Length: 162
Image 1 (cartoon, one colour):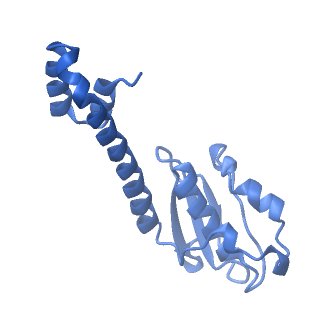
Image 2 (cartoon, one colour; image 1 turned 90 degrees about the vertical axis):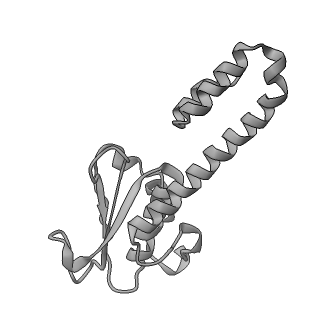
């Protein structure tokens, strides 16, 4: 059974939580017809906040372009599809490990790094940002065009990809 009071407080809707507590104190008959509506509204609020969070993180990331793994042509690249799929889980960021994508121009480094960042934002609630190679001490201009860092919401940058 849903704890509506806890959900209202979690969403920082304290006025609504107080009003709901007053209604429930009056008895089940006063709240039965309103409970389904409140549950529906809370579900919509959770969905809307999640969508706005993803949209905000995508804007803040300043990625060079929106790319995803579904649009990457692994047949035309030497990239290991299994390894990239494994990296898309972003488990390496949990242990503060780095991933460096190395290759010549046009080999898909930026596409893959951007796709990993998009995956981090949309599927794993991570933050990401993008920096042109000239702005980073880690970059090699012959092999790196963009550095994309991902990290958890509560931790500093945990990984970088170029």
